[in-house]
Image 1 (spheres, rainbow, N blue to C red):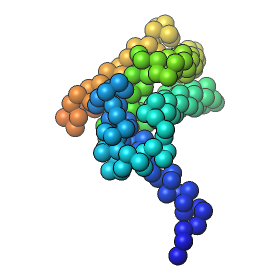
Image 2 (image 1 turned 30 degrees about the vertical axis):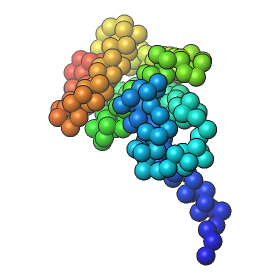
Image 3 (image 1 turned 90 degrees about the horizontal axis):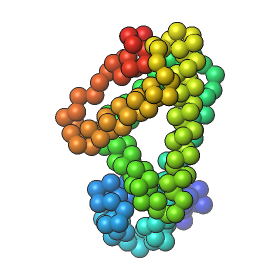
Image 4 (image 1 turned 180 degrees about the horizontal axis):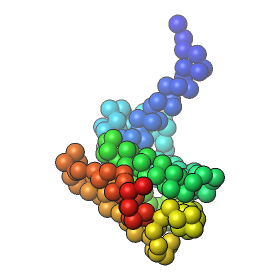
Amino acid sequence: MPRTDEQNVAIRAGTRDTIRTAAVREFAARGFAAASIRGIAAEAGLSTGSIYRHYATKEDLFDELLTQAATGLGAVAEQLAGPGRPLDLIRAFTATYLADLQGDRGEAEFYMVVNQGFTSDTPPGTTARLAAAHTALWRAFADLVRRGQEEQQFGRGDAEQLTVAFFAMLAGLTTLRLALGDDLTMPELDLVLRHLTGSDR
């Protein structure tokens, strides 16, 4: 019995997800320059022909991953800029980030791939695109910190500096997750938030 159009679409989507997951591992392990379609195919358990049916070049695949990252950062910025109690919004964001890190190495590896986009500017314009998305996120976060300070939910301090330090802490945890794997003792949510609140809240 032939497959329906809906089944074919679902199969193609599933294959692309498998390819993207494998590509993240390959790019994170080898870097963009050394990574290859052959290596991605081996990681995905597919033939190189299967990869090429979905992506003409590794640059196209890399670009799609970075576009996904920029879109995700924009979505988080919109959430943080939305209505709600500042502490609750930042708590939800941080809890999700920590849970993703603890789940598997995939999120940490994806973070490494995004950093490669920053440093390599591949394809051209990637650094500016990712910088704009990060800037939007940091501004939304800093605005939320300022609002939380006004409502006495957060401790005193320059909101921009608190934001930079907070994201540096998350970046450090991400790097440790890659280096230590399951041996990393992930800090509890309230301990991470104490950087902003100054206490358990």
